[in-house]
Amino acid sequence: MEKEQPIVVNLPEGQNTLTILQGDAPAQLDHQPPVKIDIKGTIFAPLNFLDKRVKDIDQHKAHILVCRDDLRITLIINEDDEYTRGKVLGELSFSDIFKKFGINADRSWEPEKLGQFLKLNRSFAANKDDIMNVISALKNFTAKVNQDMSRETNEKGDRAFRFKQSVDSNIPEKFKLKLPIFSGGEYVEIEVETYACIDGTEVHIGLQSAGANDVIEETRANVINDVVAKIREKAPEIVIIEQ
Image (cartoon, rainbow, N blue to C red; front, side, top):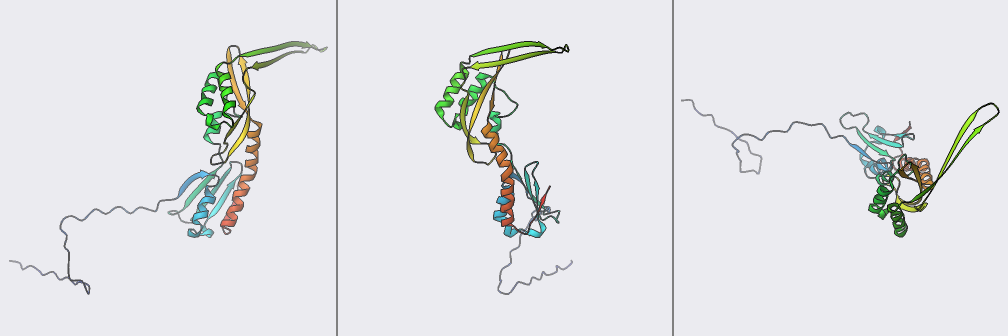
């Protein structure tokens, strides 16, 4: 009979016990590459990321891409490492509630549906009494349509047909909202004008706001400059490239 070979175990100094486990060893997980950073947020996202992580990144292996036409700022870190390269994208985009109102957009409402929408979103009204007056008028919409038509003929024989239509309705011409125009932006008060379009028996109400347009243009002109300036202060060694 073959003689069993003794097992020799050398314990570290100071250790007097040895634990022997029986059974199959647990399966080992496959090695996975590091999870890349891929974040998308408001226009302030790259700045917010640097505000907390600037000490953890190599500024000489990072860069900023600024695209003013698309209103985007992109932070790239670990640019020379395919496994750990990361991206933080910041965009300036309209808030969901501003888009739902359809202000200054190619959108119109049926009076009853606009009234229902304003009722559900009356929390965005600057004055609750004013918005309730608008809602009441929309539920009981009445309008008077004035149409002027004329034909003109000049000495050359050219003919022109002119048509002009004006609508007088019971809907208040203006009301005020307080809402964020941009995602992540501050709540601003804007004056909204209503206008009615009538085609036969179909009636649609449009919303427009010169004040909202002013805020949009001012924000577009200034916010990117402000964010880029603060990034330069927070991470002066990062290359900033205008696209």
